[in-house]
Image 1 (cartoon, rainbow, N blue to C red):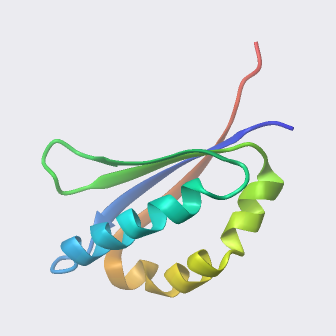
Image 2: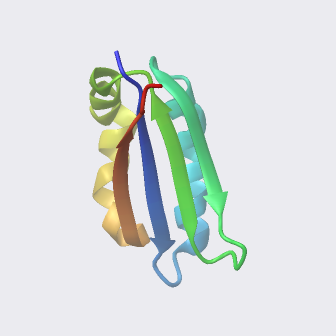
Length: 96
């Protein structure tokens, strides 16, 4: 199976920055504990205004299972309430 990496650019809505980041931080341990999660990091820009989530999954199937987890189902309805931008980019790995 080929790993899948996701880069998610996040820009919290004004007035929701603290709630948006605390929500992401609370999800981190749950996501990291999932089968197939190889990496889950939340990164912040130098100006502290935008964020990036960097995730790597061991397979597409396990990432799809992650999306169906209870914590992701609970989080999904709040994405657009908390974030002005939540842009998910998918990357495959180039084998040498």
